[in-house]
Length: 243
Image (cartoon, one colour):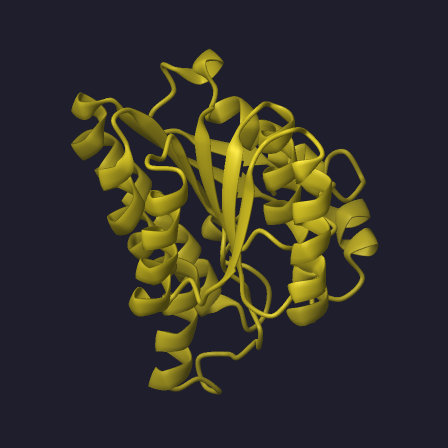
């Protein structure tokens, strides 16, 4: 069976991705940080597809914790076919004036360094494979008030996508980015986004909020053989949000 890694796989887009890949016959290993009960629920549901599911509490921005997770993945599965670097978030909004260097570093680590760490650890386990970075529409729009560091980190993922698509493509590893828009996930509660239904009615062409499963289905396609000639691409999943 093919093996997939999902960072931040206990809730939202990450959880939906674990389930979507399990449904397609992937063994899946995923990380979570605080949502232990949610992680247990994901393991139970995804295991129902007859595949192996491994969950581990690990800070995706910690080299040591992720290296321990990678060691366990190598021991249990031996190889990796797909990596979905999904871990990230906006736990606190601050403007430039309100920010400091510690705030900058923390959000960059959470949203960008975490993707580097996962890539550095898991690409060596791939003979051929796919890396999917979960970026954000904020990479284009700059995000809402107080999201400038988050937007910068998510834009950084796009640069990482293009650079590594070029570097890893010749060895059979594709690298792509998915840019979700307003998706109904716990992210918006933590980020104090406000009424996302109103945001969607005012800004999204389809006049509704997206579902985590709609993003997960795109990710599942991108790691499949059906997407074998898609490399270095940025895929918008936002219902139409282009100003």
